[in-house]
Length: 311
Image (tube, rainbow, N blue to C red; front, side, top):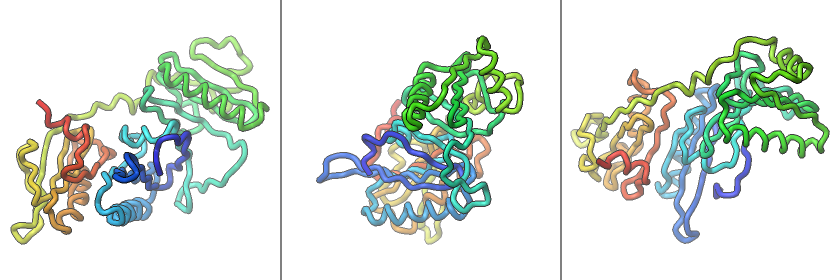
């Protein structure tokens, strides 16, 4: 698909997805392949998504940049494909609750991010899900309540307004909408209903704890090579000059782990490098396990990759 013009997409947190974004001139298309892993996706689903991504990459001649996306830590390249992402609870044939299309299913949506990075996610229908830094929408079908945290951003408020308008249009202007601003409980009846729907009034967190995580800046590079007759994963100097075309490399920056594939690297090195990157991420206690992993080919480096080698 071409990402431009895609308005809204709905993902379920119990599933995995593959998204192909093609861009550029029709005669010289470039590709990004993203496999997105929901928070509660099964190991079988995650493994299948990774395997099918490799198949798609082979079909396209190894040209795509591959992105491993984990719910809540999506790359900007992925988020920019869509105007709006809504993540709902459930999945298809998983050990979790199976979600069937159900009109007016009560849910609580969490709206979080900046103007360029906004995600709408369904969260637990409970007061404990709220925080003062974001905006939430309690959707009860015929009545919709918008909770505006006192420290919510302009972007989050704007996105909430658009969602409220979309729900109203979808339901043929049959809904009653209430905007509840933290600290202003003048509409006592609306607030009473809101608190009751979430299990009762309770203190609100100052901010979303997930937003307080500090990204550790780790600059490390490892070579993946079988030139010795055995496939080895060895550290090398973190420098662009260390990247040689005969091998593959795992490049850790902190925010992202890159897998760089040299033009003359062999199939074994190409295939194994992503596995080494995943193992490196799992074994490094300083890195967040949901850190994106991005596979990129020599000669197709993007601006983000190159920026980590600039002095």
